[in-house]
Image 1 (spheres, rainbow, N blue to C red):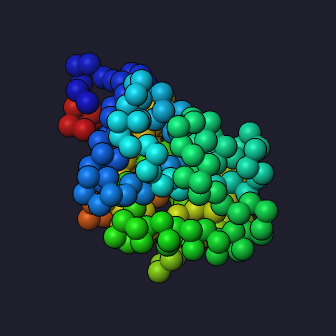
Image 2 (cartoon, rainbow, N blue to C red):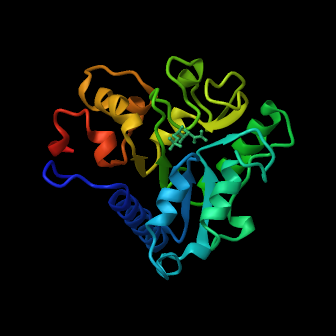
Length: 239
Ligand code: 6PG
């Protein structure tokens, strides 16, 4: 990102998609697997929108295993379902490749089921996600990890449930911070002026404890941010 020519949503979309395709190709070459988690919200559309014709096939899409960074406890065909969104945005993925949360169970049951699914999936790629793609809420939440919420302190598991999400619906299932932070690659995709204050805070406020600021571990962390989302930053040129 440069201060002279800030990226528009289309550029962010293309760059993030290139990151995804590169992560997939590299993981498949290195380990024969690509195990990736995707958030909901605007992210699946932004990512898929930047993929050119034939590129998914070239990046071995038929061999990907896709999980959800978080899911809303609604029917899988509901407008609000992240599963539905991912399936619609990436029609090249077979049904068995996108691992759904058991939204027919209660939150506790869905967490146990998804913990098993995540565990089995990441076991194929050395125990960690190859890549996790995250959105960012204007309050600094990411996946379904909300500012100040006790879920941020959950340790030793990959998946947790939330019953009191400030963003509807209240009941959700999410990857934990510990699980996300172990990923080989993590990327945020964040667009629009509505995010400018939270992006500024994450990059410029020392000791920022917003969930988005707590993401990052041993692996690579990348941010794909457009002009609007970066517009409150003093140091945008350094991103
Ligand atoms: C969900 C999410 C959530 C989302 C952010 C940003 O609600 O399902 O996964 O964490 O990524 O709220 O959403 P937008 O990209 O739509 O602003």
